[in-house]
Length: 174
Image (tube, rainbow, N blue to C red; front, top):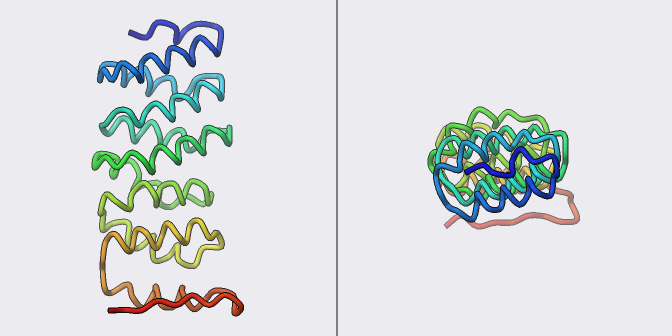
């Protein structure tokens, strides 16, 4: 099943990852999860992209691991894949990472958890409304919006009025 993943050529390993993803065989999951630590960033990026073709807690765990990668392309691919995953099993892997100090990782985790409706993410989302990164703040609003908790309206109002004076942010509460 994992033919090509041990090949010395990164191109051959990338093709092996694509083949595993195209197989849609759940038996490929352990091989892909292991390949997320491949020595080549191109292979790791391909793995992060391929993992969205599968479901299960090990997929989210591998993507969260990829968020710590030294290659920016790998982190971006893992972040995008976490956002697309939308697997309830991903919640347990993402929740502990909501304390990430890196804005890309935090935004990715917030994006990955929002549609999973995990109330445990609410505290982080409210805190993230004050984050310096616009992307993090947008993802935080997304988490709050999906959870539909009316007690968060004061925090949302405060965040909306905290923007620059030349670009006020307005919203209506029905």
